[in-house]
Length: 284
Ligand code: PAF
Image: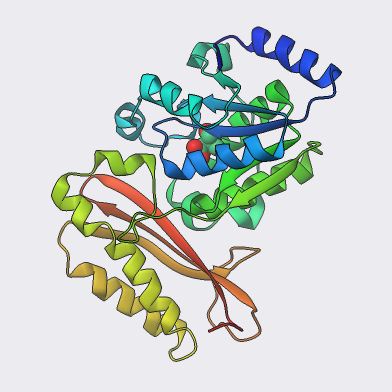
């Protein structure tokens, strides 16, 4: 595996690969890789001739300076892991390399960014859209792989791909969980042992809510989730929403919907975690 830090070097490699007819799979990440990332990378290695992974902690998508500062950075370990999953190129640029000038681009995703992560993390999706657009232009992948844990991000990137006519296929992979249900996330590394024990409560709350979808009105389910999580002092619920799985708009009633998404964000101590469940209402 080759490690590339310069945009110009990666552009030259990509041009030669595409000229040689190679199909490129791309896994964009912010590093601190876990099994969830590795599954995306293995899929890319299986489905494409060449796999490129980027590790870049993107400053423009953090609306909170301390979250950016504390985001885990484990490039040496990431490099070792990438060598085990068939990755051909690791792109690990500096912030100056990606942003030689301050970015002033503004994206607007309408209703899609007015809810949940967009509502609670102002500017977050603008930063995601900016960096993902830059990376897509540099890497020019045939396929790009994202995890369902960041469900709203996937919807935003889908809209970005359509809106800007990126010529690539977006692949979304199911969330990978620890044995106790906690969704794998780079941020889990920041949890203390006690917080790590509490963190699966988010998934438990989603499961309880899903089981009640046909039995109780949405408002009652939402109150129960809030009450369930309030019992733990270290957990501060930011939002819990039941949304249409495509538009991600909050629902007052699930009738008439085939599939809904249950989405949650909460602080466990100082660490902000998100999770979601897609529920096919015909199957429960
Ligand atoms: O999901 C992430 O890790 C990031 O938001 C991404 C897509 C790599 C953009 O920085």
